[in-house]
Length: 273
Image (tube, rainbow, N blue to C red; front, side):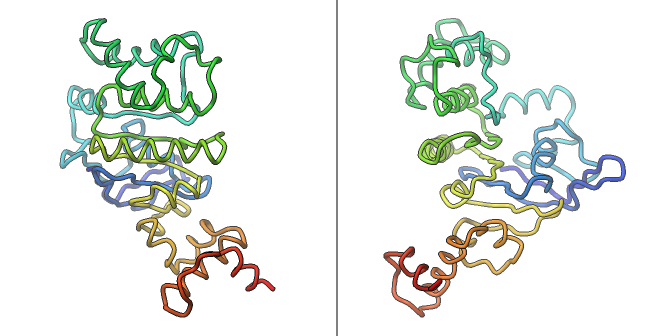
């Protein structure tokens, strides 16, 4: 579990984060969402120690990261897996070499054990046999899966994913979402996902924090979003007319004013007409 308490962060006179608090639960996909410039990236960088908050506290399983010495922080970072927005693979290295790079940096495993571990995580992300391929030889979705394999190769307790579906088609995005969710549940990881993808919000959003202009505007689950009356959140999530109509239908269904909907699109079309 990661808990943030009253985190503030400014750069000069510009306030980026103002009194942000929240709990990232273990075994769940915890999403941080918000428009560009809302503070998502800065909050995440504070959580992993790349930025130091001006004030506030950040606890990893009850231990305040901001009070840790250098050795304790190094130990903590070895428990954190990172999936970067662009996958951040080394073009000159094979898939296997990209994953082993992390093991070389943070483990004392033998070469044999390293290769065994690489094969295990490649199997987990359904890329068995891709060891000797270069990033230029695989698709965007496969690169993301290699990125996930590298992020989990050290069996992390915490997994940070920065825009995991950026640049992917909707179908591949669903595959990545399901993979992140299954890994989170199977290994009981505390997973934090920064995303603009509303499909991800509705697919894997066990716990969601919505930031608006540097403040926490709303917090809840993917189920809570459907029935939320927060106008800022609704304007962000349900930006299109179709989604606004879908939300309206679900609200009516929840209030018992209509029977269970089997064809939302048809009802929305009738509503618009």
